[in-house]
Length: 408
Image (cartoon, rainbow, N blue to C red; front, side, top):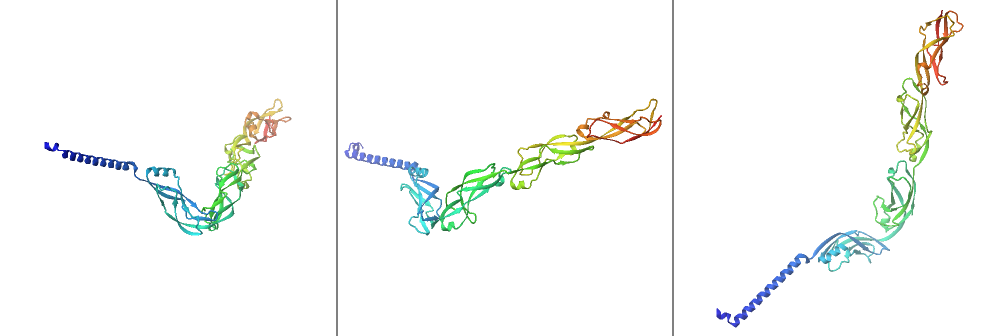
């Protein structure tokens, strides 16, 4: 064994074997690191974009096309360094090139401007399109006012103007022949005044009411609408219910205004000839005076300057005063009076007049008397005179107009 280590050839062979082993070890290590590096982040990446717009390249002066989808899906594949920026920035186009093709149906392939560093797959790859000759025609624009029932109460649309009132529609001849209406929609909800030069988009519809994808020039028009709140003046009447308590009657009832201005739509105003107050319950009224009440406005009618009105009630009251003593006037000295009929020198009276004037009166405010001047002893029938407060509007009546007496 010692002789081997001392041999020159043994040393040479051992050195060569060690060098080969070292080379193999280093190669395996490097390849393994490169493989791990690719697996950890440098492998190809896929990114699906599902809303990529499609550009149409065609002779727009003479032709229009149908059948081209608005959006397509694009699947990007490549290194992350190329795919990620492309997916984020979308700085590429997907298009269909129809230049050079004539009228009719064609199957064409969708193309793109994506760099060759990234593989791009478009779905669908091909599409069927129809190319037709371009045509243009002028149409009148009609305004469709929506939510007119939600205008502020009492307001209505009187008239309107569109500027311009016509638009030019450009599409294929077959599509133009399908057009049923050119409309703008104007929302009236909550409006309390007119519309001045509101810009609204124009829409085209076929005879079935389906919206058409056509070129409209101009794409919008200006609408001005006169929104009015009509009004008129009508008489005010006072509405009552029930009956006054016993002993009362109604001389007069009147409002503090003869007319009121009411606001409503024209068709509602046509049916209004007067406005009544809310019902006043007479069964609760026992005094003349003024009370506040509201107007009984029909639905859709407003009277903004007349929240409440005053109503004046003039009552007539009938009151009875009992046992008014009868006094004897001009009785001769030494004579006495005996009442035959009635036996008691008293009379009951009834007073009728304005409630506000007689409400405080009592029996002491009245008197009754008989005039006995020049009468001889014996039985007599004499009239009874009733006296009370001086008021020409008061009526006093007595159940007893005369008495039968005996003078002794």
